[in-house]
Length: 193
Image (tube, rainbow, N blue to C red):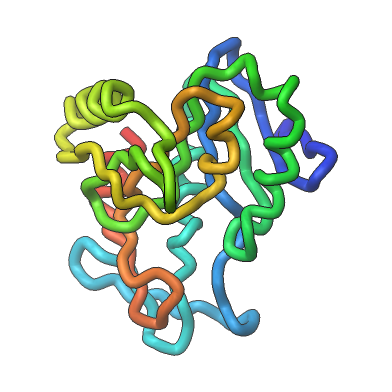
């Protein structure tokens, strides 16, 4: 509801007046469109093994929708084409005038339950001070995230020349892009809170 679309097909919504962008991506990796048969196994949701789960990045979408529902101030970006080269975010990042007003972009698109990413692929994307402060705030809710310099690459990395602090947070999925992918539901709920 009330989402806008930018010139490149990404969706966004602004709540309040902040210097924070929360980001996720709308695509997943799959060889074809198939029905996903969900299986609950303790604290995890997975599939019956005939498809991927798509927690990369349905988990990120879930977090952004929860934050929006709870009216947490921020600019929310739902990027297209992350899995095929960050198509939506790379196009948007070229609109430097639009994004220079932001101090931070936080992507929710990292495996495991422990990372605040400081480096994506080949370079630093956020400061240790920012990563430590963000981890401290999140960990007050009962989680155990810490700075991690082993990030791969996601949409927030496209903004490193425009936005000072660009990170990616663990959202609790494992074995992404495979038929054994699973999502830690308890962690996802705690991260939302």
